[in-house]
Image (tube, rainbow, N blue to C red; front, side):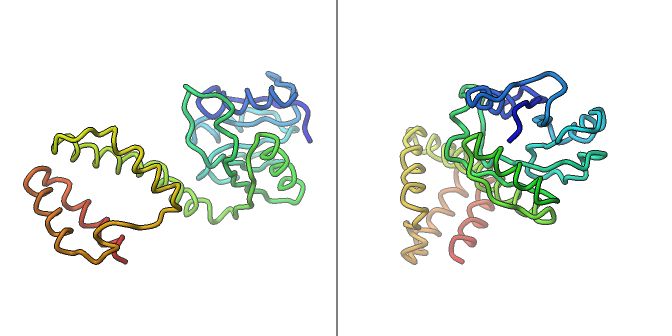
Length: 219
């Protein structure tokens, strides 16, 4: 396992990763480290990697960026923490999350898995050509959950109901293993059509989204 790491980038992910490495006794350096871990925006990975002198291991934490962006480095891998991060929290955000490791050699794969476990992540191997499909799934699970909450909160406000009351409902749905309940599960299409009429009368711009989600849920 590497004993010295240079973390490039102090954003939401980089700050959490650096803090966890420090907790685990890894020496953080500004240069001359065994591993350079790029925690920079996806669009900055290639330029940042190109400025690093060949020699150390170089890795990025992007879910969608190919390993080719780490050129000219051959000792490289990708480690994507499958988690959403906020600056308001610290390294505990890593605990219990999974991590996608993409590598081109057995040595790189082993190092990626070791680093993931050191960070408190559960690693799994992800093929290079599957990265975009994987990242799309991650974006749906995380980003679109935010969208769904905002849309539901908008309808609650229009109905005079407290939007904050949605949070326990959403959490319980996750705790219940995403077991489907409600009118579509019961085959109550009269209620679904009544939903459409109410949305059309109050927030007509949301009816197409409701229709798409209802169709996907029915399938």
